[in-house]
Image 1 (cartoon, rainbow, N blue to C red):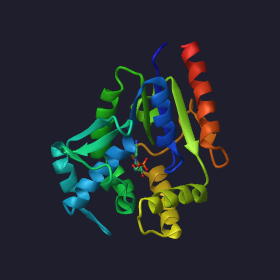
Image 2 (tube, protein in one colour):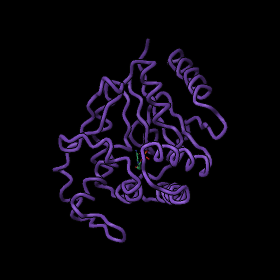
Image 3 (cartoon, rainbow, N blue to C red):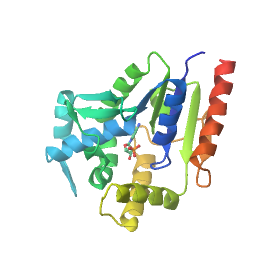
Amino acid sequence: MKKITIAIDGFSSTGKSTLAKQLAKELGYVYVDTGAMYRAITYFAMQKQLIKTDFFDKKSLTEVLPKIQLEFKFNADLGFAEMYLNDENVEKQIRTIEVSNFVSKVAEVSEVRSKLVEQQKEMGKNKAIVMDGRDIGTVVFPDAELKIFMTASAETRAQRRFDELQQKGDDVSYEDVLKNVVERDYIDTHREDSPLVIADDAIEIDNSYLNKEEQFAAVLDLVNDVVKTN
Ligand code: DC
């Protein structure tokens, strides 16, 4: 069967990674969560005290970027790849609300974006990849054979994120999560470098009222159509 590139973009907490993981497993493709890469750089900046509330030393972060090594290592028990920052598994650390609060600011920095986009293009050079993020169909793989753009209402997304964080034992309020979702949407869609926009040839899926199974079946049909016609 012909191998293709699948780009999944959309707003935060629309279930991009769940769908991308399901697809990669079904198709035997590599899955890449590009948000994890932006999150790992944010975590690094926090550790080095380069970003705090009302403070962001962009210049120093830009200077140390060449020293930041990011790698995905496949965890066979979990069935997906985990993020390593300078050889340390940071999968848990990068999913906290603190990292979520700062990550959009780090993702605005052009030097950060170009470093990560270069790595992402390299990962996709043999196709057979499902990559999710914000600029995959527009910047990383503008020639992807299938582009999906996922949306859902901010309230639906905040509720999903809140449930996830609560399950992990994170002590957060729904209101704080909703505020974070709305703020990230604004920054992601208004930044100068590669703002979140829907690619002309992307297929939009609003999953506010779709369950995971229905959504997966619909997207798998799209994949099969694309594979047949390519
Ligand atoms: O998908 P996520 O919520 O883990 O992404 C975290 C942040 O990273 C999000 O606020 C926007 C940014 N991001 C980006 O700018 N470009 C990408 N390709 C992926 C994520």
